[in-house]
Length: 183
Image (cartoon, rainbow, N blue to C red):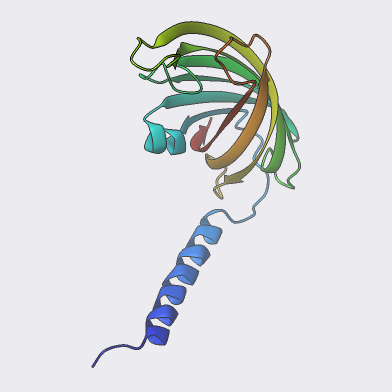
């Protein structure tokens, strides 16, 4: 006897609800732990999507703000964000726990790569190496485990290229899903 589509939907919803319950229990609200002022994280979202390796460090100034640095490497220099990038950021947190919840950030990004363009059909591509700097703003959301040792960070940002090359876009976007460890 086959299950009806409604029963299948109920099973899926039940499993999804149990998964949400388990996740919310692991990120439950607890007392703030201020003994971990440093955080190291890896952007697993960007790695899965594009193969780019991005690592970041964040130092918590107080419960509402932090400064940090990000560096990434991508083997494909023709990607929109180039082959290599490094830059600082400043974040302000709006959550109730210590450096947790919704945040806004200002960032700087220096990055390098190669731009390519087909100018005329059946002619060689024009390749232009670039070094550029961008400034921008972003938003994100950070969740902490109960012990405050591990974090999950989801963010997106938009910046303006200040030293734009001729073939380069005026704006740059970045984002990701990062897993971090506080120490």
